[in-house]
Length: 95
Image (cartoon, rainbow, N blue to C red; front, side, top):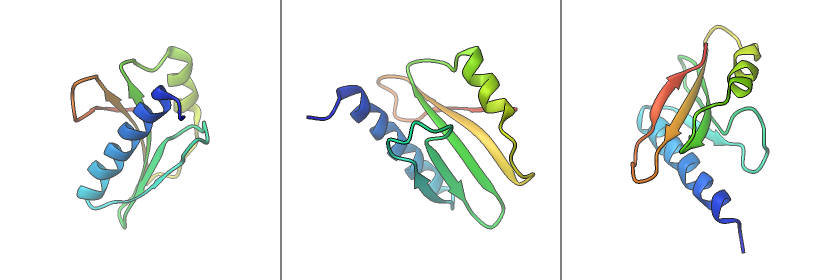
């Protein structure tokens, strides 16, 4: 049986995909990769790299790690921070 926390994370990642697709992006989810980003959204204008978090903020080390990742100018790094009981995330831009 899959891990309860994994299932909760997958649900939020799929919600992020739904939000981005509604906004006109095509999406990819990096399932189980434990990579830097959980969801990538792209369209003709640019690319969004999204890290999803449930009921917690990025640690200073995580924020620094994401900030250090070099991306082309038309890319944006985001965190979708979900809270239990809320459907939509708080969206945070990582500089």
